[in-house]
Image 1: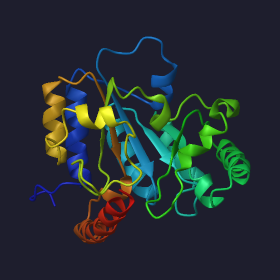
Image 2: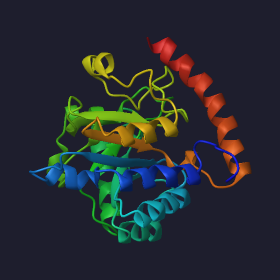
Image 3: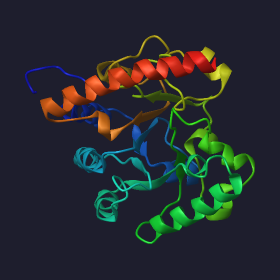
Image 4: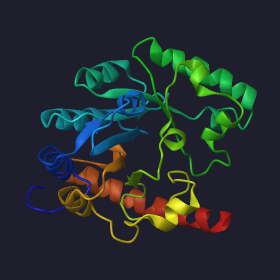
Length: 265
């Protein structure tokens, strides 16, 4: 794959990390960002939602570590992701493990059951690793938004200091995500969105960013003080057959997501 300039490969992610390391940006974990009083003039929050592939998450964590970068990996409580031995390896590289919760989905909208399940799953993580921040998982097929649980409860009562969708000031932080296997802000995002109309209207990057090379150019320009980059490890591969499989699967999903977005609007 080195002879091809393919996007969403671990080689391309290596190039992204190298660019960040050569810039004047400082990378911070979310727990560092939420707990520091004085932030660097320029910083990047590398966020990973580990939905399925914890093995790829570890590979990305090692790449980041090679360039002295830190990031946050939000992990689900599922059989494919909840593997404490991987959490410990990722954390040993200087990264943060966070809880990628989806308990309102699992409780089918029952808030009382959802908060009980949240505490149970959070404690299961904490048996193996320190958890200071959380981030909701967004299932496009579910009618519930997991972060709505905090309309009734307070995550700070569980020793949590922040939730990216709720705690970041998106007037200061530019949010970019690889949802749909593209960095472009298309109508295929059901849950991975900032629910702020002003942010969507005023984001200067909408329509100008679609590839990782665009992200690399943006970082080289250094004109955006604070950036949050959300990437999903299951989208980034090192072998051609895996890359092709993910591409085909995501294109099929995007058709369905576009239909969901259209229907809900």
